[in-house]
Amino acid sequence: MLRFLTAGESHGQGLTAVVEGIPAGLALSEDDIVPDLRRRQGGYGRGGRQKIERDRARITSGVRHGFTLGSPISLWIENKDWENWQEVMAVEERDGPAKRITRLRPGHADLAGTMKYGFDDVRPILERASARETAARVAVGGVCRTFLASFGVRVNSRTVSIGEVAAHGRDDEDWDAVEASEVRCGDAATSAAMIEAIDRAREAGDTIGGVFEVVAEGVPIGLGSHVQWDRRLDGRLAQALMSIHAVKAVEIGEGLRLAATPGHDAHDVIRPDSEWDERPWSRRSNHAGGLEGGMTNGEAVIARAALKPISTLSKPLPSADLASGGQVQAHYERSDVCVVPAGGVIGEAMVAIVLAEAVLQKFGGDGMDEILRSYRAYQETVGPRGVPQPIESAETTEV
Image 1 (cartoon, rainbow, N blue to C red):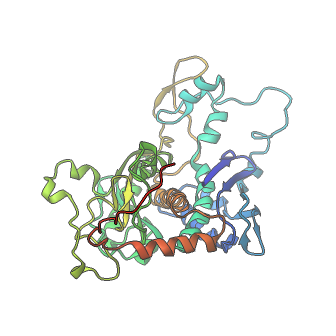
Image 2 (image 1 turned 180 degrees about the vertical axis):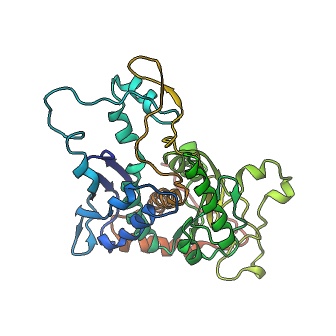
C-alpha cells in the first residue's frame, strides 16, 4: 500500500524519490521535509561534502495547493557538487576512455559490485553505493512523518554509543537536548567524550562507528500481524534499518540483553485498569520495544542499529588492484569520520516509512478523512472485552 523508489548517484545531477500510496488530503509542503534533511547533514564527524550541499527536496508531483492528491509524489534533491563532477559523471558519451578507479576499498561495495555487474572501473559502483542516496530516503521519511503526525505518532532518535563511549538509559529522554548535541546525545558529559573519540579517530586517519536508537511514541496497538512471516512488523523494521549503509546489526527493544535474562524479568507486565493513566493496556516496562508477536502493543516502538566504521579511510588499508590483482593501498575519496548521529536521522526515516505503511494497511482508505474515521472507530474498541456472552440459538435455513 506504500512503496517508494530512489534514483541518483552521489556525484550526479541529483537524487529522485517517488512515493506511492500516500492518501489524498494530507497537508504537505516542502518545508515539512527540510528539517529532517538538515538534521541528516549535521552531526560531529561529518566530512567536507556537507559544506557544499544545502539539501532541499522539491516536490514536483502529487501535491496541489498544499494537499496531496493520492497520486505518486515525486521529490527532487539537487546535488550542488555536480558542478565539480560534470565531466566524470556526464550522461552523454565522451570521446576517449574515462579515468578508471581500480584500487578496491575493503568493507565497501567495490569488489562485489564490479564482479556482479562486470565493470572494470569502481566508479559506477561507488556512486550508487554511496550513502548520499539516504538523502532521498530522509525526504520520503519526511512525507511519512507528516502522515503519522495525523495519528499522534512521533519518531525521534538518539546516539547510544560512539566507539566505546556509551550513553545511559532513555527514561524520559529530553529530545530537545538530543537535538542540541553535536553527536545527538542528551547527556553533556557523554557527548563531550563522544566528540573526543571522533577527534582521536580523525587524527589517526581512521573512522569510528557506533549505535543509534529510534523511538516511535504514540503508536496504536495492533499494527503488523502474527499470521505470516512477512507481515510481522518487527521483521519489517529490522529489514528497513539493516538496509541503511554501514548498519551491521539491528535489535528491537532490549534485544541481545534479553537472551541472557530469565523469563520472569524479560517480559513486560500488563497493568490492571486501576493503574491505567491516559491509555489502556499499558505496561510496567518495555523490554520488548513495543512489539509482541509481530504486532505493536501500545508501548513505544524502540529499535537500535549498529553502524560499522565507514569504509573510506584517509589512511587507506592495504588492498588489491581490480585490473592487475596486485597489492595497492585502497582508494581514498573525501569522506566522513563518523556518521552515527546522521544515521539516527536516517533510521527515523526508515521507521517512519514502515509505520506509515502499517497504518495504511490497518486503517485503509484513499483519503485522510476516511482513514482517520477508521482509526478513531478502532481506537474506541481498544479496551476490556468483558465476559463473552453465549450466542442465542436461532433457526437457520439450509442453502
